[in-house]
Length: 143
Image (cartoon, rainbow, N blue to C red):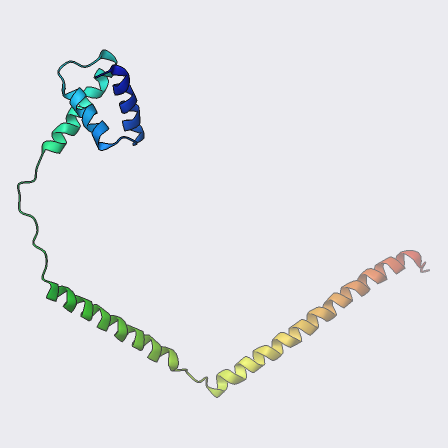
């Protein structure tokens, strides 16, 4: 195989654009005992990949669970979800009526807020009058 072609396939391999045939050609090339000096650094990489591909699993595979068990689990999960949904709806529909004292207190708070706004507005007006008095006192001579 030409060294130019190996370099081309190697570039494509590390860019992730090789086909299976091109990868097989690279694997065969690096499986040889003698490799070009410029490509010797890649030989351990391809040998490790070849070793990993040759390994097999000799243990037992896990058994697939029974399909009846899956259906039972699905039904149980759905029942719990529906029960939870209805419990939240029942809790949301029960409205607690405020006591007469609470109603009076809320009205009192609203009135006090209104009075506070009016007092603040009057206080702002007084600040303007105070500024007016200070400036007029500068121009008026008092004996």
